[in-house]
Image (cartoon, rainbow, N blue to C red; front, side, top):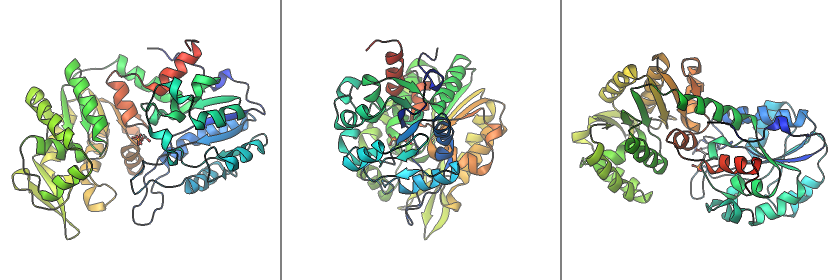
Length: 408
Ligand code: 3PG
């Protein structure tokens, strides 16, 4: 596989206006609304610093969460955090492409940095469509004429064919940022050297991505085992006929995830020997962690996998030669429920396997635990990295390649 696109090295940036799409979607404390982790902001600071040092007027586009979620919020705090990391003023405007945003861009001087508002506040952004259609959205039509280049550094969102991810590269000179470049090099390299057994550990709450990848890698025979954790595990527990309790069933129903329970049933029927589900879990009862066998789950929220499951999964991790992990095993932000996530990360870090861990939350947990040296690559992308590993094309990358090879 080759990296067939332009990079920052191919651009003359001095005094040029550059739109750079980053992914600084970060964990937010639901009770205070404060950012809990700046891993992704630190990461993209590298690209932003280079652009500014090369004399560009850097206009940053980014998202935070999705509509309807508690952490769907403005990027004001992100701008403050980025300012601190760069030790340089980062302007923020609470507008995406309206008159305030456009005037702020027009006023910029060489080396200035401006962060625009959460692009997902604009509803057209959320609709996934082909680059050609996205190039005709208001976002692209209003901002593209104000800039010389578009740089996509948002590897973690590259599996989304959303306007800010694929629309600009259709109409203007475009290149990959440093993080995009590094991530793709590391993951392509891993894909060229997969050794068996190859184990996927899929958790977190983004069940849509996990199921898609599972179907893909099991169909192709490229995974030996899939260890399920987090909400993914709860869905498979329910799909296997286990009573996960009314609270957990309602949680899944309210998320509109019942279709995934059906899919899990089908996958378990076909690949039951490869998909491993927890044998025990931890629920939150009166603010305490209490563990139960899956035969006996009470009507309380499941917040983690149980101790026996952790031991069993650590055994799988130790026999693996290649490991891909995405998403935390439980509500790791709460201390009593971070055991599954921490122990699995520790097992990965102490194994001899080639390992990639991905997803904003899992990467943040690994960084906070200081285990990054034991992991071969910590990817900023969860859905993006597992989709790529499963052999899917990432629209955000494909459009950069198409621009470069002038297929558009
Ligand atoms: C991520 O955190 O995986 C990326 O920011 C993409 O977010 P999304 O799954 O809401 O598109």
